[in-house]
Image (cartoon, rainbow, N blue to C red; front, top):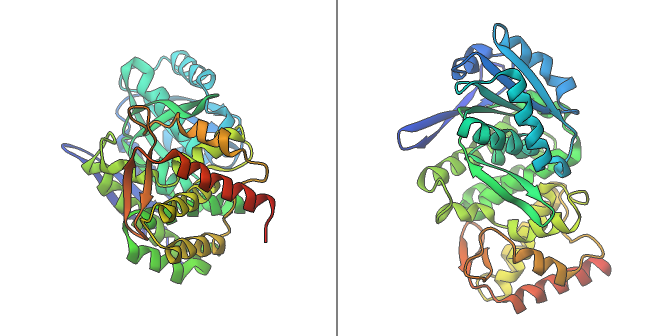
Length: 373
């Protein structure tokens, strides 16, 4: 990464009535303990990380915890480890630490770490503080902001969880330097998603700067993160617990979560599944007469330029995927509730979605994946 000095930090505030917390985006933030240490209110801290991230960044973080009673709990890397069993182990680590009501859980890692750490914090003594320190682009632009926490079940992704807002989000983009290319690209899917939902100008900006983003140009990466976080912060402020507008942030997720679950969380990264899911949602919108083919084509072209998959995994079973979609949390009264669109920047919640149309889109996509042009 290049082109920005460590003191150049963007601050975005997430305001939830009288509750507020900062999202800091910039370089050198893990070292900047004077900034984030003030968000810890007690003397106990548990750092939750994983076996990939901890060797790279735990020592850097630990320098800012001097004087506290703290310990670490490490997960194995991967979505498959976002489980109840590991929540139990994290809670055992808090018990061993002697964590009191003013303790803090610090999530150092990607979305899996953040979701699980936040859920453990929500459960311990009915809720203690936690701080998000995302180390992946996907976590920086999406999962670290907004207070969604949870774990997976064999039946589906994120079926168990809680809304539990962090005390702060510390997005140190220096950590992106060690992020594998595939995971970096997966994070860009969530950036595109924000623009596709409600900001056509941002979508056009992404098209203009796609090559710079793919090359990890620092200034463009920070701008993209800040614009996506600012948009999400506004949505969360208006609808914290997803009773209405916040559901729009799930564009592509009903399809994507089904693809992840069908692959047992090992075939696709979350961002890759969201990219494919957005395209499936766009094609369903076309089939239902809500949008036109040019918008779908622009979306597919941008995702491909950013190194993301634009077709389903070979061998995907449309009937299985539809069955998994029926378990999605957004569904109501036994009917599919999907996030579709009327073109770029105009997402819409659609209740009672036509399952025959959904299955037709899945079958077409499955056939295209098996017999590419």
